[in-house]
Length: 246
Length: 385
Image (cartoon, each protein chain N blue to C red):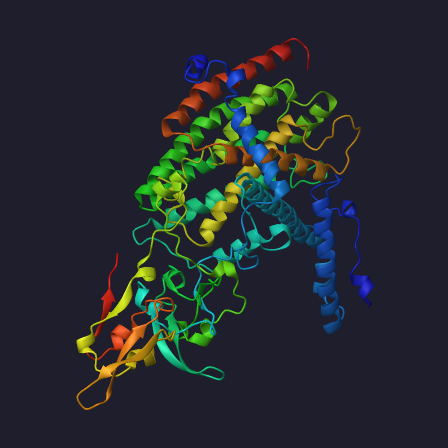
């Protein structure tokens, strides 16, 4: 009867190993892990190695930032707000402030930053006792040892192009779309020139009005422009608009 | 009268009230020695307060030293097997952790104090009893399950000089008490008024009763070969001849498999089956009750391994060595070696199915146990042993 029940199991016990094979497997694993120690990392006491481009909380290179506000616009959770700070060396400047409690660590701000001032940082231990502490002002946002690896660049490739060996990136809207002036609306207030973070706008005299005063129109330097749309936002008469090329 | 008149450690063999007579017994010597120190100090202080009183001399008399020495002896004996059990739990965690490629324990040196931390944690838990539970059955059943496990652990001698009682019925009485707990587990499962506990209790009863029969047949083969129930005689017989694992290798395998099932360990942990039955028959037991049930599981595992070492691995004897060399340590090392095999099996196998469990018990182990008994009878009749 015993033998009849054994029929369910492999016939050639010696070849298949049957019950001894798993025994051997676990014993081998046990010896192996005893020698090279288990893979577990005892987290609070020993830290895992983190790569430079680890997407922790956003970081800021304070001196590089131009306060253009692209990060504020691009943020999917609207956790970034541009605030004015009084710096000792730079004077009153605009810098981003991040509500880390709402941040989802996507790294878009670092990706779209035209001057690579926004970076990702390896800092992920962000627990605090209050929600107010989670709102990081520009000085808290600073990261001292920013390396080139922390900067995130947009890498847009088509798989079909890569297969063909073409590594050129397709043209981005940030490179070709530029503000366009509608001349008859402009009132020569030159607010756009004052607000431009990269000084790409220069007011040029194009003529004289009936009272004999000069008519000034903004001239946009395409090589300097970073497509931040600050001039478009600030224009009181909607004289500037985006010239969509793509 | 000075301190040395009251506190003096005498030879326990000279105590006329000793139940062990002329036999050497280390736990008894330690216990009575401890009482001679503690009781002697109490008597000394009492005598300083009231000189010449009768209580002081009564405290250090032979009868009182014997009685309280026996109590302390039980504490010493239990402490040793308790530490062995903690070592077994530690070993199980370590070995399982290495097999699963993870860290196992963290508290204390090499993580040894993890069990104590767990014990402290379970002590701090609230005592909760289900509203509609059978109160008497709930408490008594689990008390008897735990008590019987500790009792049989205490009945196993560690060596001819480290025992609580040297009794002729030996294996028989151990097995009789071993068989009490399936019934009480069934009672516990019913008393909790919970479907999971009831199912677990019924599974436990079915499994343990069906695996006791091949186990009993292996016991019978061992006893038949040694010609005695007494554990000392069985070990002495193996020292004089060969270890029983050589003629009875089938019996050894059957005993270990049935023993794993009796101790409700993986792969035979159907009564617990945390994936399907919450915690099996222990579902409604919380806090220290649960902790003691876990501890009693390990006590039962210790008993299985100790019986395996006594019956098949020559107990406290070392092969090719005349006489005994630290017999307690040798015996405990053999127990831990057998327990390592149990842990190894736990890390290797998954839980078997409900329909397989009785098949293996009745259709595989029972015929093998009968075959083992048959071989032993042939060897005995042939005059080999």
